[in-house]
Length: 280
Length: 257
Image 1 (tube, each protein chain N blue to C red):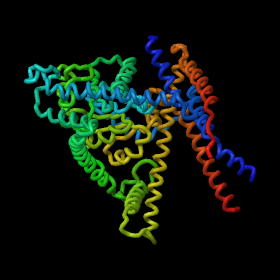
Image 2 (image 1 turned 60 degrees about the vertical axis):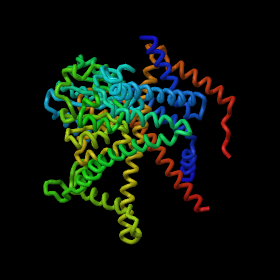
Image 3 (image 1 turned 120 degrees about the vertical axis):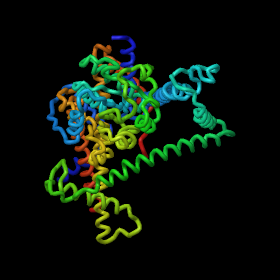
Image 4 (image 1 turned 90 degrees about the vertical axis):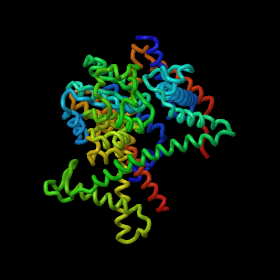
């Protein structure tokens, strides 16, 4: 027993760089040699899927790209998945960005989606682009979209885009989806977009935001949530198009096992040390 | 593949490895990556803000085509001349004047205006969506006849009781006008447990998020290690490891204490 305790204490005081290395390997190896792990969909992800599935065909849907390259691994698979589901029912997509680099995420997503759907600009989608102003932009869109956007991301006047006919504020959309990595994002869309206008809203968020957004899901202010990379993987499963999120789940799971192992080990080492110090 | 794409991939691989090298210890590669990030971000934001907001929305309304000031400059975004836009221009200039000591009082006007607007916007949003809607959502019919007693993920009588007890006990913990002793103290202690479970879930989600970002970086490094990118990751890793090894040899880590 004493030998085991000594071993635990030895592991408990291991150099932090050894732990970094183990986590790195736990992530790296499954990415090199992918392992299929079963993915079980959760009710919050199913809510998003069902809410989007229930939109009448040929509707106008606003998608907001509120993230940048730093959170691309988590949010990008979600926005790609949502775009695929929308385009399969011939919805028109209107893209806004509350983050400046969201524009490049949207361009990247459109390029990716274009390989499957042969998109026609101003018929299937319009990329309105980025406007600085955070919640003021969402509030502006709710009251008068054309005051916020005079031109789209390419500088084309909105008046010259047929797809923009009859689109004057958020109430002219049948659904809003935001891929959100923080501020401004889901909270601002709920407070100044979804709640005041009553337009159904769903969100895909980074893992770190899930706990804060969940009360909105419970209250029905947000129709489900795609929670981080696992949420994206579940969504890819629901739409039947496996992507980078599903590929990353094995790495995610193994890294979690290593972290849990070291948390347990650290706690055991703490209690053993405390007991020994009390004894002597 | 275009040379610029390959060059971009090599730079991305170098910067990623530079940032990750901090896990070993603070070093010049990390400093380079950190400073490049800060500088590029600041420049990118400044340029984006100017060309997407100030130029079309401010100058577009002060110097529109056929406007009274068109003889100074023409910024045509289909806007009409609006004299009110001199007000934000003035406040913006006043904020910039804070770099001069004798004029830094002027910045307060712009800041006061911004704070006032933000406070007004936030109050409305929070009150409506966070306070009223959340109170309404928490006021559930606990023993609704149609609900099962227990359900892991959906609505149930048990979950409703947890919401009721959790909400009230956590709120009572922050009520400081009464000493938290006896049965009242035990109830508020229950509130702390609810809060701790919430913090634990937040920590778990935070870890999950960080691992997802690591997966993203590793995916890119694996992609850039392919022959299409001339094995960019391998060359950059060799470069970083060799130089870092030499640097560590020259600058040994000081032992604490």
